[in-house]
Length: 231
Image 1: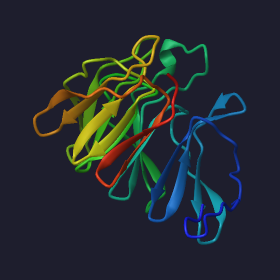
Image 2 (image 1 turned 45 degrees about the vertical axis):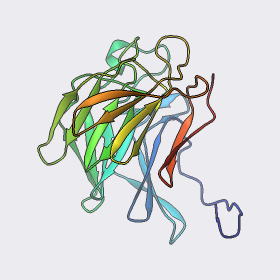
Image 3 (image 1 turned 30 degrees about the vertical axis):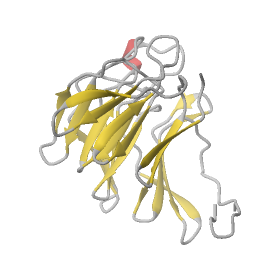
C-alpha cells in the first residue's frame, strides 16, 4: 500500500502459501516464518526484499510451528512457542521452545525454553526484553506471563494476569504493556489490564465498550486503538 498515492500494488507471491504464520521487518526486509500450508504445519522461512521485488528461501527453523509469536530486538528475530499440530491438538503439539534468527549469519539458534508451552499468545518488546502473555497450553487458556532477557539469556516468570485469556491483544504504550479483550473460557471479555515492568504488577484499566476477541490493536499518537473482532 502506498499512502501517498492511496493505492495498492500486488507484489511477487511467496513460494509457499501459508496461514497462521508470522511476519516481521528487519533492516527493510520482510521475514515470514512458519504457519500452515496445505494442512501441514511448516518450519520454512522466506524473506522479501522490496528493493528487488523478490522472495528467497532462508534456513528453516528446527521445529515446525504455527500460532507462534515473533519479536525483533537489535536486528535479530525471536520466535516463541506455538503449536506443531492441527485440530484436534495433542498435548505434545504445544511447544515451549524459542529460536532466534540472525540475518547476518543466516543461522537459527535455540534459546532457553519458556516455563510453559503455549500458542495463540502475544509477545511484546519493552526495553529490549520480550514479554509473553496468555494463550493456551493444551486445553485451557493461560493467565501467566513471562519475560525474556536476551543478555542474560533466561526467562523470568512474572505476576499472572487477573484473567486467563487467548485471542487477546498486547500493546506497548508509554513503556507499559496493555492487554485487551480476548477469551478466557468460552465468551469474549471487555476487560483490560496493564503491566508495569518497573513495579512488576498488573493494574485493571477501564473496560472496553464491548467484549471482543480476535481483534487488532494499534498505538498511534499516544493512544490505543482497538479495531474489529468478535463479540
